[in-house]
Length: 158
Image (tube, rainbow, N blue to C red; front, side, top):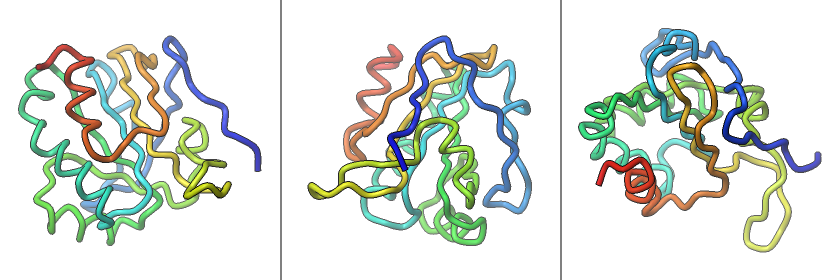
C-alpha cells in the first residue's frame, strides 16, 4: 500500500453513510448546511484516543455555539463505539468505518510511521468541512493531546 491521497482546502469532502454508536446511521449529507469537524482516530478506548475524544467532549459547547457538529470516525464496530461513548460520557456521534473505505477516501488510512517503522493503519486526522460540503481544513498526523485546543485556536474559538 502506498501513502494515501490527502485532501486539501476546497476539495469536496467525500460523502459517507455509516453505522453509528447508537444503532442508527449518519451520512455527511445529513449534516449539509452545518459546519462539521470530522476526526479520525485509530481505536476507541486506547489512552490517546480517549484523551482526544474527551477533549472534544469538553470543548463541545464552544464548538456547537460556533455552529460546528463534531463526528468521530474509527474502524471500531458500533458496539465498541457505544461502550466507549458510555464510558467517557461522549455527547457527539461516533461512526464505524469497519472496512476503512471512508477513511481511505479522506487520506486518513494508509502507510504511516509508528515507532520508526512503516505500518498501515489509521492516520490520526481532523477535517473541518464547510456548510457547502467542501473541505476547509485537512490536518494529518495530529497529536492526540493538545490537538483540540490547537484546533479551537485556529477556528478562532479561544
